[in-house]
Image (cartoon, rainbow, N blue to C red; front, side, top):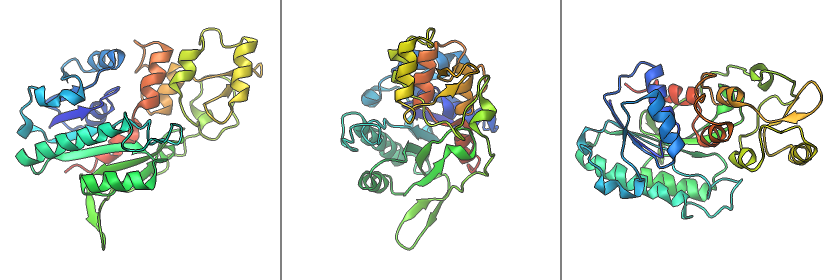
Length: 286
């Protein structure tokens, strides 16, 4: 397959294709975050970086050869954790750039497959706008079925669809529950959470992760028990997941982010796709 991945992040789409045995011929990545590009090229040096998604008309791509287009457009304006500016917000409105690119490819290759992902907490009005723009309604899958994370997401795709009385809908069944608990993936300490809540990039950036047992750090963690992942070590002190645990939370191998700092790993994994979920969706590609 020839693949175009927009908002490529940590390259989960490519890894998922490789893991389920789908051969990739050319893989084009649109990404501007330097360490995301660094991680992608580390694992897949043959990835073709095309740059800023807003400059797509300048890209040197044989558009008609694209078999699959991937998009995890920004969720900040849609998420309940954000300011709720909606799909027309400054960041989440980049979804419409994906739609423009998809429609351009469709004029040359009507059979192109696509996958679009966004947060499960998005407003229903915004979900409706996105669905009508894509011509298909999404399936909603929580990563908790295949990992130790609560990660509710919408997935729009024409990989497999079905017609209802009124609409075309994404027909990807939920994966089988693997029953992976948070306690099963931590390296040390204990936790009373059945599943991890979320990875927040800002928490790692705003604090010195090498000095987490100071009184100031501990007070900060205790005040935010519902907004981030918290682990309790043997001394009853709190900590955040390390790189290995964060990789496990998203279904990646332990060493996947070894070349990154903890803060950079939290940024990419916190924003990224859950690897086993994408593998599951791609398993329906004929």
